[in-house]
Each structure stands twice: as structure tokens, then as C-alpha cells.
Picture 1: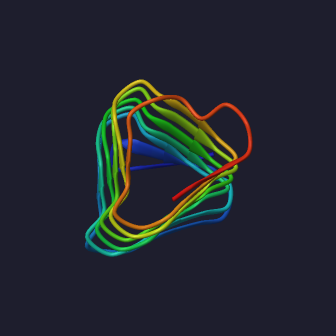
Picture 2 (picture 1 turned 30 degrees about the vertical axis):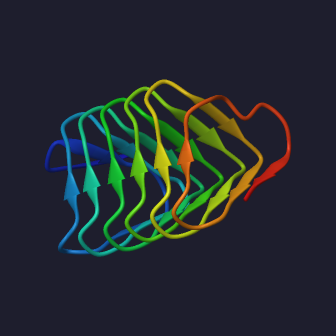
Length: 118
């Protein structure tokens, strides 16, 4: 693993130059962070793509997911095997598993099994 700035890169990772990555984050393998993204401290990203202007709050984990433009992921969330459209908000400390979330939705409770949020 290679240490860059104040976060760790593992494997294939692409971070847009305008993205901001917090202290102690671990990115990779297989991660893309798009333009204007804000990743707060202690976030873990693996096998995921964050499109433009995504905000991931502190200590969230995102695995094997695609997070749509301008989405906001609350702190201490665990998101796995999910796909979010544009402008999706996830309240803090939620488990989101196998969710397909349409644009402009707010998730306020856990999604434990495969679900389309309309």
C-alpha cells in the first residue's frame, strides 16, 4: 500500500484533482472519486464509484456501489452493493444493502435486503 498525503491508497484508485480527501481514509482497491467530492475523515471506499459532488461524512464505509451526483452519505453509514441516482441523502449510521435508489430520495431507515427505493 502507498501512503499519499494523509490517506491510504490500495490498488487501482482514481481521484479527481478537485476532490478533497480527509485524514485516515482508505481508498481502494477499484475506486473512482469524481470531481468536487468531499470525503471526510476515516472513510473507507472499496470497489465503488462516486460521481461528481458527492459528500461522504466521517467514518462511513462504501463497498461495491455507485453513488450518484450530489449525494450525501451520513456519518457511520455502511453502504454495500447499492446504486444511487442523483441527489440521494442517507441519514447517519444506516445500513444500506443492495438498494437501487432513484434520484432526490432521502433514506431514513436501514435497507437490509434487495430493494428499489422509488
